[in-house]
Amino acid sequence: MISLNQLRAFLTAARTGSFTAAASELGVTQASISELVRRMEDEYKIPVFTRGSRRLALTPAGRELLGHAEQAVAAADNASHALRAVHSLTGGVATFGVLRNADYYFLSDLVARFHDLYPLVKVRLVGLNSTDVAAAVAEGSLEAGLVILPIDEAELKVTPLMRDEVLYASSDLSHVKRPVRISDLTNARLILYDAHAGWKDPTRRQLAERCQLAGVKLEPWIEVEHVEAALSLVARGIGDKFISRAVAASAACPPSITTVPLAEPLYDTIAFVRREASPLSPATREIARLAREMLTSYPSPNRPKNAPRK
Image (cartoon, rainbow, N blue to C red; front, top):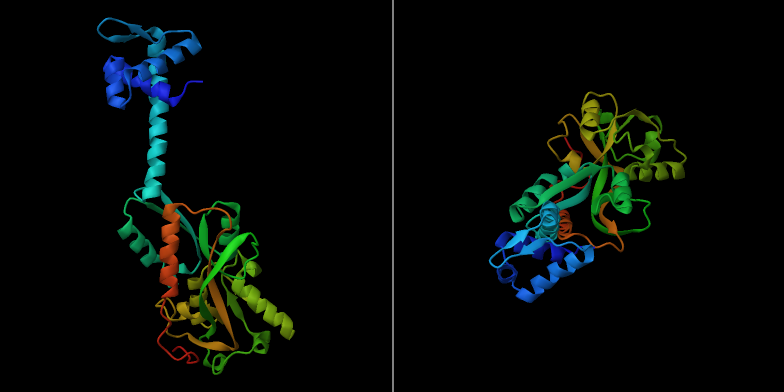
């Protein structure tokens, strides 16, 4: 089997025309270059150079080998450069999963801050429902991510970062004149988002558990995929929904919607997840650090906790 050292010695000698010049360029002895090439020729029982008195000349076998050697050495050099670039954060890709509503917390600022610090590193942020992010991290298609708890992936290391209160939202003031009890949901026309995830969604799971304990059956009137679509329907008076305080405080929440907390407060807990025994690449480790830093310093809305949002 030809080694990369043999191919590199062969290529350098072919380009410079002598073992001495090749040795000088590669920083080794002339005997080392000569021995690397000789062993390759002995193994395959065919010469790759004609040793002349003034300059090395390629034999037909050497000319046949030349293109393959160039490709192999270039591939090895590119691979080495890629690994060094990732290690030094001058290249590579930061791969990170984020919860579907990450925009309402930090996403644009996170990408901008990371790009300012590491402009040569590519960023791949995958926005999914938390249950899908957790599954992707567990199977290895994502290195790490942010999720809302609870999740079922036992092999993941979970680090809770912040809590955000879940509120009840309606454009009908009679529905939000006081904190909402679980029993109030019996006849509610609920509009729920993340239709694809359905009852695997962590917030829905928490609500379903509470309803089960209270003997209340929770059924959506309408299901859509995105929170913005659900907000639009609520603003038109078609139904009510649950939203996080971050969404309620955002410009995406129409002014006709009012929010109140639940009588028994409910919270989304945002957590960082990664595989227990797998090290993160430097790029992903750094974007994860920034994400944790931004989430833990995320400001709460500047209004009393139980005040309706007008």
